[in-house]
Amino acid sequence: MLIPVILSGGSGTRLWPLSRETYPKQFLPLLGKRSLFQLTLDRLNGLPERGAPILVCNDQHRFLVAEQLRLLGLNDATVLLEPVGRNTAPATACAALTALERDPDALLLVLPADHLIRDLAALHRALVAGRQAAEQGRLVTFGIVPTRPETGFGYIQRGPLLQNGSESDSTGSQQSLYAIQAFVEKPDLKTAQGYWESGDYYWNSGMFLFRADRFLQELQHHAPAIREACQRALAQADLGFSKRDKNFILLDAEAFTASPSDSIDYSIMEKTRDAVVVPLQAGWNDVGNWSSLWEESEQDGAGNAVSGDVLLQRVTHSFIRSESRLVAAIGLDNHVIIETADAVLVADKREVQDVKTLVKQLQQMDRSEAVTHRVVYRPWGSYECVERAHRFQVKRILVNPGAKLSLQFHHHRAEHWIVVKGTARVTKGDEQFLLSEDQSTYIPLGVTHRLENPGKIPLEIIEVQSGSYLAEDDIVRFEDSYGRVPSGEGSDAPT
Image 1 (cartoon, rainbow, N blue to C red):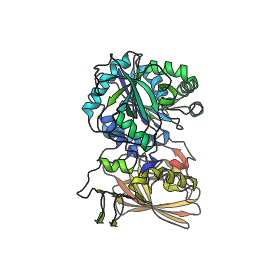
Image 2: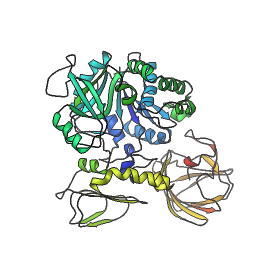
Image 3: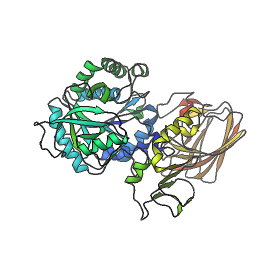
């Protein structure tokens, strides 16, 4: 059985300010209505003898994953939740151990969640070519045939053409299968030019196909500490920690944190004797920065990719995206302008690799803009801070149909709720009542309360908080439908 393993632990810092720690690029609809994560799952359709996917993601993205799976109608996926990031080798090890519980002959197709592939037929042909080799015990990776000299990717140098691929020719087609001569780090421009001209080098896609048991055998030989830590993390995992999240497995934090942090390339592929590469020409793009996203976006006659409320004069070859207000630009060429509610990025398109450095600077300054948006998503909906000043704060809260916040109270603030759309069911102390549009209620400091949406349309309320302390960690939680801790979990506080 072929079991897809989707790795979704990245933070996508080069696409800041749109991509942030709590809502990274793989979950954003960057090219249409579906996210890169959803597109990755979509491209699995039509693969023969395919089992339910295994997804590996950061624990704080659990509810994003659950919602995006729900929108796709996927209810059979297993989701492994990482308490900390430990790179691709530990993530894949946990997936391999999980897959073997289903099928002792499981094949793993390991895919990053944040890549774009336009030609699905070409991808499927390459998978057919790699599958036979993987079934025979080879560890297969897929090398992207370069379209230009590129300094932002690692490379794979191919070795001799193997005769036991599904097809073997000398053209470098998707059906060819090669031994791997070497993995090469990101080169300078002159070296990349040489790689491109030689025809013997491929971009390293980070996509793999191998038997689960073979991967674990190699891991035991080359990186036993990773395998041991992952076995313990699964053995001690929190299974079924919420009735709603029965398909989620929270890896044991202490055991998983003890694993060395390493990639599949470094820990296995560069050391094993059984690594092979299948060349792939399928319209691949890692959407790693604003320049690569501009390449994939629809452009006007002046070479501009525009989204949102944008007004341009004499602007060419630029990427301009507005999320919340009018953006006007005059006399620019080859620029990126990204506007969000709380941050604006302006950069030369040739310099966008350095956005990651800028995000590190924000993190060092402990700026919230590196982590969250003004709109913060929760399992029940979202909230947005509209105004904040001394001793008061105003929020716009959206609650999905059928969803409810936790039963809670606050030590330092009172709240006033005004319903502007939909119907609210309110628990206040020993009372429970309904509020419709234009009605309101007051929640005094220290009173236990809960907000629910019993209706069929989203509930929208305006919340006015007042008090001496308005931070999100002022919450005592008594009951919750989403597996969050009973109290004191400020980062997950609903209001």
